[in-house]
Length: 266
Image 1 (tube, rainbow, N blue to C red):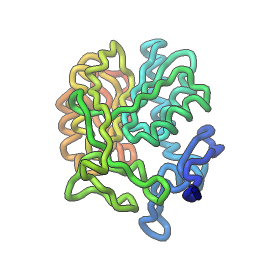
Image 2: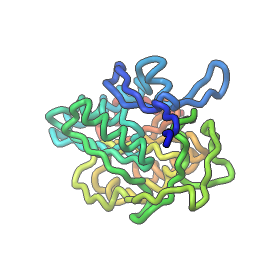
Image 3: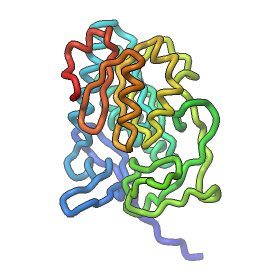
């Protein structure tokens, strides 16, 4: 029997941020001069979100200076692991990373990238992060066709972002994935919590209330999809000062010395 043709979608790229398994179809062209997609940026400029990643590494380094070794960072919505790998390499010998990714194919790349870059202080978990433990039906895009896979929203809504290809949210076209809350991890220390979960940011915060109150981690929260008006008041009510960093909100507890080193958002 003749086999169907296959595309080499996932390829290996040597970038300024490490060697990565990435998807060469990970792009969505919004305009002639505007293209989004982690794979695109890694292939086009050998880096993705370098300013953001460097700022996060700076927060981790300051946390180590202030609190000592044993720094813990959580990457909720890790995709293929650009942030995870950079953090883990920077924290060799004094910190660890736990990364969560609900898209199965991206999770495989994430785990592979942790291994390729010899990040023995990083762990990957195939799971979504939300307000409670359970499961979540996750849509499955066509990874052999162009699309910004990191822009994929887990829940169906009237205003779902167009990632560059149609997405089927029906039960027969989705995959069941474990969903966990940050609080369920029972961690005694968390220094940095990154939340990039495509319109589920508030759910992650609600599921991390106890951890945030106990550990007072620095927070980097994406605020692209209409939740900024909810996110900032929530963070401020939890005792945090909120700063702007591109499309993200950076929040540092008002009692944390880190607060004095970051310019406030307007």
